[in-house]
Length: 303
Image (cartoon, rainbow, N blue to C red; front, top):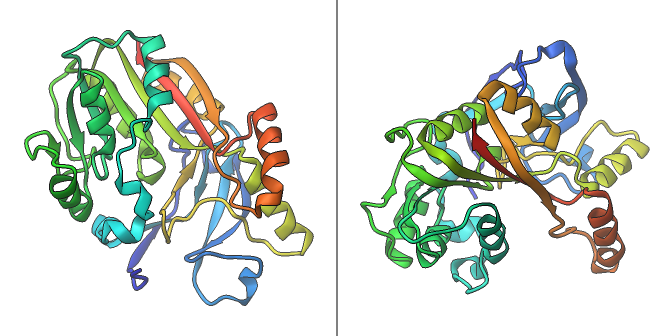
Protein backbone atom coordinates (compact mmCIF):
# COMPACT_ATOMS: atom_id res chain seq x y z
CA UNK A 1 0.00 0.00 0.00
CA UNK A 2 1.38 3.39 -1.03
CA UNK A 3 1.95 5.76 1.90
CA UNK A 4 4.08 8.61 0.51
CA UNK A 5 1.22 10.96 -0.34
CA UNK A 6 1.41 14.72 -0.56
CA UNK A 7 -1.54 16.50 1.05
CA UNK A 8 -2.85 19.99 1.38
CA UNK A 9 -4.81 20.54 4.58
CA UNK A 10 -8.00 22.58 4.21
CA UNK A 11 -9.52 24.21 7.29
CA UNK A 12 -13.29 23.68 7.41
CA UNK A 13 -15.23 26.72 8.60
CA UNK A 14 -18.75 25.48 7.85
CA UNK A 15 -20.38 22.08 8.19
CA UNK A 16 -20.79 20.53 4.76
CA UNK A 17 -24.27 19.20 5.53
CA UNK A 18 -26.01 21.88 7.60
CA UNK A 19 -23.84 24.96 6.92
CA UNK A 20 -23.44 25.80 10.62
CA UNK A 21 -20.19 27.60 11.42
CA UNK A 22 -17.17 26.23 13.28
CA UNK A 23 -18.34 27.60 16.63
CA UNK A 24 -20.67 24.56 16.71
CA UNK A 25 -17.84 22.05 16.14
CA UNK A 26 -16.76 19.80 19.00
CA UNK A 27 -13.24 18.34 18.95
CA UNK A 28 -13.35 14.57 19.43
CA UNK A 29 -9.64 13.74 19.11
CA UNK A 30 -6.87 12.90 16.67
CA UNK A 31 -6.76 10.42 13.77
CA UNK A 32 -3.47 9.17 12.36
CA UNK A 33 -2.58 8.35 8.77
CA UNK A 34 -2.37 4.64 9.62
CA UNK A 35 -4.23 2.00 11.57
CA UNK A 36 -3.86 3.12 15.19
CA UNK A 37 -4.35 -0.08 17.17
CA UNK A 38 -4.23 -0.08 20.97
CA UNK A 39 -1.24 2.24 21.33
CA UNK A 40 -1.32 5.05 18.76
CA UNK A 41 0.99 7.14 20.93
CA UNK A 42 3.79 4.69 20.07
CA UNK A 43 3.34 5.02 16.30
CA UNK A 44 5.12 7.38 13.94
CA UNK A 45 2.96 9.34 11.54
CA UNK A 46 0.92 12.46 11.02
CA UNK A 47 -2.55 13.12 12.35
CA UNK A 48 -5.49 15.42 11.83
CA UNK A 49 -8.19 16.55 14.22
CA UNK A 50 -11.60 14.86 14.14
CA UNK A 51 -14.59 17.06 14.95
CA UNK A 52 -18.34 16.67 15.28
CA UNK A 53 -20.93 19.21 14.20
CA UNK A 54 -23.17 19.69 17.23
CA UNK A 55 -25.98 20.95 15.00
CA UNK A 56 -26.38 17.87 12.76
CA UNK A 57 -24.04 15.17 14.09
CA UNK A 58 -21.75 15.05 11.04
CA UNK A 59 -18.24 13.85 11.94
CA UNK A 60 -15.27 14.87 9.80
CA UNK A 61 -11.59 15.79 9.96
CA UNK A 62 -10.61 19.43 10.38
CA UNK A 63 -8.37 20.35 8.73
CA UNK A 64 -9.38 18.06 5.87
CA UNK A 65 -6.41 16.29 4.22
CA UNK A 66 -6.74 16.46 0.42
CA UNK A 67 -4.28 14.49 -1.77
CA UNK A 68 -2.77 15.95 -4.93
CA UNK A 69 -4.77 13.47 -7.01
CA UNK A 70 -7.68 11.14 -6.30
CA UNK A 71 -5.57 8.40 -7.89
CA UNK A 72 -3.19 8.71 -4.91
CA UNK A 73 -5.92 7.11 -2.82
CA UNK A 74 -7.89 4.99 -5.27
CA UNK A 75 -5.49 4.38 -8.16
CA UNK A 76 -4.35 1.16 -6.51
CA UNK A 77 -4.77 -2.48 -7.54
CA UNK A 78 -8.34 -3.46 -6.57
CA UNK A 79 -6.90 -6.62 -4.99
CA UNK A 80 -5.17 -4.48 -2.38
CA UNK A 81 -8.35 -2.54 -1.58
CA UNK A 82 -10.89 -5.39 -1.39
CA UNK A 83 -10.76 -8.91 0.00
CA UNK A 84 -10.70 -11.76 -2.60
CA UNK A 85 -14.32 -12.78 -1.94
CA UNK A 86 -15.50 -9.32 -2.95
CA UNK A 87 -14.73 -10.04 -6.61
CA UNK A 88 -17.59 -12.58 -6.85
CA UNK A 89 -21.12 -11.41 -7.64
CA UNK A 90 -23.20 -13.56 -5.32
CA UNK A 91 -26.88 -14.10 -6.17
CA UNK A 92 -27.83 -12.56 -2.81
CA UNK A 93 -25.63 -9.49 -3.27
CA UNK A 94 -27.76 -6.37 -2.56
CA UNK A 95 -30.89 -8.53 -2.14
CA UNK A 96 -31.96 -6.64 0.98
CA UNK A 97 -31.47 -3.31 -0.78
CA UNK A 98 -33.42 -4.44 -3.85
CA UNK A 99 -36.28 -5.78 -1.72
CA UNK A 100 -36.34 -2.49 0.22
CA UNK A 101 -36.32 -0.43 -2.97
CA UNK A 102 -39.14 -2.50 -4.46
CA UNK A 103 -41.31 -1.67 -1.46
CA UNK A 104 -40.65 2.05 -1.88
CA UNK A 105 -40.92 2.15 -5.66
CA UNK A 106 -42.12 -0.76 -7.76
CA UNK A 107 -39.28 -1.71 -10.09
CA UNK A 108 -40.30 -1.92 -13.74
CA UNK A 109 -38.23 -3.11 -16.68
CA UNK A 110 -36.56 -0.27 -18.54
CA UNK A 111 -36.26 2.11 -15.60
CA UNK A 112 -32.95 3.98 -15.67
CA UNK A 113 -30.45 3.57 -12.81
CA UNK A 114 -27.18 5.30 -12.00
CA UNK A 115 -24.57 3.80 -9.67
CA UNK A 116 -22.28 6.55 -8.37
CA UNK A 117 -18.92 5.18 -7.27
CA UNK A 118 -19.49 1.90 -9.08
CA UNK A 119 -16.18 0.30 -8.09
CA UNK A 120 -15.93 -3.05 -9.83
CA UNK A 121 -19.46 -2.72 -11.22
CA UNK A 122 -21.06 -5.39 -9.02
CA UNK A 123 -24.10 -3.27 -8.21
CA UNK A 124 -24.51 -2.45 -11.92
CA UNK A 125 -24.74 -6.18 -12.64
CA UNK A 126 -27.45 -6.59 -10.00
CA UNK A 127 -29.41 -3.57 -11.21
CA UNK A 128 -29.37 -4.96 -14.74
CA UNK A 129 -30.64 -8.32 -13.48
CA UNK A 130 -33.49 -6.47 -11.77
CA UNK A 131 -34.54 -4.85 -15.03
CA UNK A 132 -32.83 -1.47 -14.86
CA UNK A 133 -31.20 0.26 -17.81
CA UNK A 134 -28.01 0.92 -15.85
CA UNK A 135 -25.18 3.46 -15.97
CA UNK A 136 -22.27 4.02 -13.58
CA UNK A 137 -19.55 6.47 -12.55
CA UNK A 138 -16.16 5.34 -11.27
CA UNK A 139 -13.25 7.82 -10.86
CA UNK A 140 -10.52 5.26 -10.04
CA UNK A 141 -8.81 4.17 -13.26
CA UNK A 142 -7.75 0.83 -11.76
CA UNK A 143 -11.23 0.00 -10.45
CA UNK A 144 -12.73 1.11 -13.76
CA UNK A 145 -10.40 -1.13 -15.79
CA UNK A 146 -11.09 -4.11 -13.54
CA UNK A 147 -14.85 -3.62 -13.94
CA UNK A 148 -14.47 -3.63 -17.73
CA UNK A 149 -12.10 -6.63 -17.79
CA UNK A 150 -13.46 -8.89 -15.07
CA UNK A 151 -17.18 -8.13 -14.87
CA UNK A 152 -17.50 -7.21 -18.55
CA UNK A 153 -19.20 -3.91 -17.81
CA UNK A 154 -19.86 -1.90 -20.97
CA UNK A 155 -17.48 1.00 -21.52
CA UNK A 156 -20.45 2.99 -22.83
CA UNK A 157 -22.34 2.49 -19.55
CA UNK A 158 -19.52 2.94 -17.02
CA UNK A 159 -17.85 6.35 -17.18
CA UNK A 160 -14.36 6.88 -15.76
CA UNK A 161 -15.09 10.13 -13.95
CA UNK A 162 -16.17 11.53 -10.61
CA UNK A 163 -19.65 12.72 -9.73
CA UNK A 164 -18.20 16.22 -9.47
CA UNK A 165 -17.15 16.12 -13.14
CA UNK A 166 -20.15 14.20 -14.50
CA UNK A 167 -23.04 15.81 -16.34
CA UNK A 168 -26.36 14.17 -17.20
CA UNK A 169 -29.64 15.65 -18.44
CA UNK A 170 -32.18 16.70 -15.81
CA UNK A 171 -34.84 14.17 -14.76
CA UNK A 172 -33.09 11.22 -16.45
CA UNK A 173 -32.89 8.48 -13.78
CA UNK A 174 -35.57 6.61 -11.83
CA UNK A 175 -33.03 5.32 -9.31
CA UNK A 176 -29.62 6.61 -8.20
CA UNK A 177 -27.38 4.88 -5.69
CA UNK A 178 -24.56 6.16 -3.48
CA UNK A 179 -23.59 2.80 -1.97
CA UNK A 180 -20.77 3.51 0.53
CA UNK A 181 -19.65 6.52 -1.52
CA UNK A 182 -20.57 9.82 0.17
CA UNK A 183 -18.04 9.27 2.96
CA UNK A 184 -15.25 9.39 0.34
CA UNK A 185 -16.29 12.70 -1.25
CA UNK A 186 -14.94 16.08 -0.19
CA UNK A 187 -18.31 17.76 -0.83
CA UNK A 188 -21.03 15.15 -0.25
CA UNK A 189 -23.78 17.78 -0.08
CA UNK A 190 -22.91 18.96 -3.59
CA UNK A 191 -22.98 15.37 -4.84
CA UNK A 192 -26.52 14.95 -3.50
CA UNK A 193 -27.54 18.24 -5.11
CA UNK A 194 -26.27 17.07 -8.51
CA UNK A 195 -27.93 13.66 -8.17
CA UNK A 196 -31.27 15.27 -7.32
CA UNK A 197 -31.04 17.27 -10.52
CA UNK A 198 -30.56 14.05 -12.52
CA UNK A 199 -33.40 12.25 -10.70
CA UNK A 200 -36.89 12.04 -12.19
CA UNK A 201 -39.82 13.33 -10.13
CA UNK A 202 -40.97 10.32 -8.13
CA UNK A 203 -37.52 8.72 -8.36
CA UNK A 204 -35.52 7.35 -5.44
CA UNK A 205 -31.94 7.93 -4.27
CA UNK A 206 -30.32 5.24 -2.13
CA UNK A 207 -27.51 6.25 0.24
CA UNK A 208 -25.47 4.00 2.52
CA UNK A 209 -22.86 5.65 4.74
CA UNK A 210 -20.86 5.07 7.96
CA UNK A 211 -22.99 5.82 11.01
CA UNK A 212 -21.61 8.50 13.35
CA UNK A 213 -23.25 6.73 16.31
CA UNK A 214 -21.68 3.31 15.68
CA UNK A 215 -21.34 1.53 19.01
CA UNK A 216 -17.89 0.11 18.29
CA UNK A 217 -16.37 3.55 17.74
CA UNK A 218 -17.90 4.74 20.97
CA UNK A 219 -16.29 1.82 22.81
CA UNK A 220 -12.90 2.41 21.18
CA UNK A 221 -13.02 6.13 21.94
CA UNK A 222 -13.97 5.42 25.55
CA UNK A 223 -10.99 3.08 25.86
CA UNK A 224 -8.60 5.71 24.48
CA UNK A 225 -10.07 8.33 26.81
CA UNK A 226 -9.85 6.01 29.84
CA UNK A 227 -6.15 5.56 29.12
CA UNK A 228 -5.62 9.32 28.85
CA UNK A 229 -5.11 9.45 25.08
CA UNK A 230 -6.72 12.06 22.82
CA UNK A 231 -7.16 9.71 19.86
CA UNK A 232 -10.38 8.43 18.28
CA UNK A 233 -11.30 5.53 16.03
CA UNK A 234 -13.58 7.56 13.76
CA UNK A 235 -12.72 8.06 10.09
CA UNK A 236 -9.62 7.15 8.09
CA UNK A 237 -8.93 10.24 5.96
CA UNK A 238 -5.33 9.32 5.13
CA UNK A 239 -5.40 5.52 4.92
CA UNK A 240 -7.68 2.83 3.52
CA UNK A 241 -10.62 2.91 3.20
CA UNK A 242 -10.22 6.74 3.15
CA UNK A 243 -13.39 7.70 5.00
CA UNK A 244 -13.75 11.46 5.34
CA UNK A 245 -17.18 11.64 6.99
CA UNK A 246 -19.58 9.81 9.28
CA UNK A 247 -23.26 10.70 9.22
CA UNK A 248 -26.32 10.59 11.45
CA UNK A 249 -29.99 10.60 10.50
CA UNK A 250 -30.09 14.17 11.81
CA UNK A 251 -27.34 15.08 9.31
CA UNK A 252 -29.69 14.21 6.45
CA UNK A 253 -32.68 15.84 8.11
CA UNK A 254 -30.74 19.11 8.25
CA UNK A 255 -29.34 18.69 4.74
CA UNK A 256 -32.82 17.99 3.33
CA UNK A 257 -33.75 21.60 4.10
CA UNK A 258 -30.72 22.83 2.14
CA UNK A 259 -31.00 20.50 -0.86
CA UNK A 260 -34.83 20.31 -0.82
CA UNK A 261 -35.50 16.59 -0.59
CA UNK A 262 -37.65 14.26 1.49
CA UNK A 263 -36.33 11.31 3.47
CA UNK A 264 -38.65 8.51 2.36
CA UNK A 265 -37.22 5.85 4.67
CA UNK A 266 -34.13 5.08 6.73
CA UNK A 267 -32.57 2.25 8.70
CA UNK A 268 -29.37 0.70 9.96
CA UNK A 269 -27.21 -2.30 9.10
CA UNK A 270 -25.49 -3.81 12.14
CA UNK A 271 -22.58 -5.26 10.09
CA UNK A 272 -19.36 -6.43 11.73
CA UNK A 273 -17.87 -5.56 15.10
CA UNK A 274 -14.20 -6.09 14.08
CA UNK A 275 -13.62 -7.29 17.64
CA UNK A 276 -12.87 -10.82 18.94
CA UNK A 277 -15.79 -13.10 18.05
CA UNK A 278 -16.67 -13.65 21.70
CA UNK A 279 -18.06 -10.08 21.71
CA UNK A 280 -20.05 -10.40 18.49
CA UNK A 281 -23.31 -11.83 19.84
CA UNK A 282 -23.94 -9.37 22.70
CA UNK A 283 -22.69 -6.30 20.84
CA UNK A 284 -24.68 -7.07 17.69
CA UNK A 285 -27.83 -7.41 19.79
CA UNK A 286 -27.15 -4.06 21.46
CA UNK A 287 -26.51 -2.37 18.11
CA UNK A 288 -29.74 -3.74 16.68
CA UNK A 289 -31.77 -2.69 19.73
CA UNK A 290 -30.31 0.82 19.93
CA UNK A 291 -29.92 1.69 16.21
CA UNK A 292 -26.17 2.00 16.71
CA UNK A 293 -25.06 -0.24 13.83
CA UNK A 294 -22.14 0.53 11.56
CA UNK A 295 -24.05 1.61 8.45
CA UNK A 296 -26.83 4.18 8.06
CA UNK A 297 -29.19 3.70 5.10
CA UNK A 298 -31.16 6.62 3.68
CA UNK A 299 -33.78 6.62 0.91
CA UNK A 300 -34.77 10.03 -0.40
CA UNK A 301 -36.80 11.68 -3.15
CA UNK A 302 -36.70 15.17 -4.65
CA UNK A 303 -39.35 17.72 -3.69
